[in-house]
Image 1 (cartoon, rainbow over the protein chains, first blue to last red):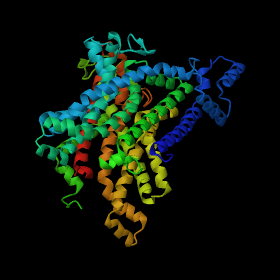
Image 2: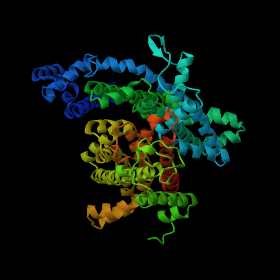
Image 3: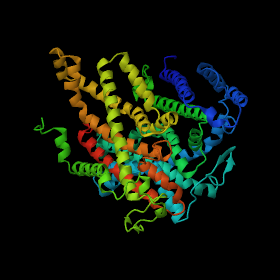
Image 4: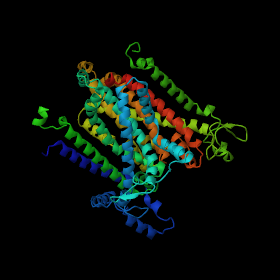
Length: 331
Length: 289
């Protein structure tokens, strides 16, 4: 079974992770000088030297990387230069906020995007379909950060309905602080989630529309019509299951994109997530935190890709390079 | 070759939407290029700015009689002038990035397609690896490493975008190479250089146009986002994104116009490019025909 495609993909993932760790480490540690930024300009030479030894930047790059890797494998990602706490715990502390925001945005995009795309795909020449499709181009064109500003301007400054920054009251659900469980938190969540959802919503509309249009031209739809099935049955029993796999793939892959794009939304809405932490760390040249964030994102992406690949291999027999089982040859 | 009924440029010209959006795009370009000629002030010349005129709302008169059509920012800069100059910077960055990444991607894609050996697989591994991560993340990290500046933004955007072109060019070139006329050209003893440049290249230009139209809008949006996050262009040469970021601070106190108008212009620019691109891909994409 060692030649199974899933195992091959897992080994590829591990190699990618390793290569990325070298690239990320070199890129971040080989450029810039944190000593000048972090040490009091009035400090004397001895204090400077102590600080450098303490931070470990006097060693060669290779030694630094070895230290970094062995520490990383032990779950220790270095200490933040600025706040002097573990970089990993800083990231983990901010992770729930980002994941909550990304998942809410994805739900909004799916709940609104799929039906709109389906409608536009079923009746391509109607006026409302054109409206939906041109609207989706508009959604692509709107820069995320500017939409965020406009949302704040409209709903926080002019109308005063919704708060413009922060997470609001959070409650600990299973030990994870969540905003969605309180009314105040929900009010804080709405604007950033809509902001983050907009781009993916447009993407989902276009994807669903084009797959639906193509599916409606297929023979099985014509046969279903000839059989006298109602449009509703054709759409829900025949078209939807056929267009689902690529859409599920894209939703899975785009989840990582949402977490990356949350950097922008979090900066606009002062949402205390990982993205905001990254921007703050970049501005302060806090290298351990940048490295920890990058490795976190890289691992997340590789994990998401691996899961999507595995699910695809499991639901699509053509991707398995094995002799077809009895069941699939009968089907 | 323009007599050919099926020529793609002719096809684009005959399409009403493509023609109109293309014309609007040219108009925007002309406006941006001519900015120093018609704008009331040079927004980067600090001597022309009057701090007493700071944060005036749109249509407000300055003491010496001029009208600030779109108001002024926190330093008394006329927003209309700043906008036109900002549009110039944004479009310029978008165009230069597209030209550079297109050339790089074209070269890499053709080399990969024509060599077909380990060079091909190495290049495509790199492309796969890069495309697995969102563009914004890669650009952000690169800029965090190399620092600010217009040249560095362009470098970061080129590194982000070349992979899209490389992949498209490679697959388009491979499709062409399977066709009979290439076999004929090889049999005729033409050099690989001649086959690639004279036979393959002209035939993949329509595909390249489709990708480029999508990528140029993305480059402009990315630059604006990076500048907004404070990692793109320096404040001395603001692009539209930086103008928006500049107004962000004052927006919560109701000074909306500093952020609003640059955003509208940015939106219109990207929208027109996307509409044009959408038509180009509908008309030229071989898979949709």
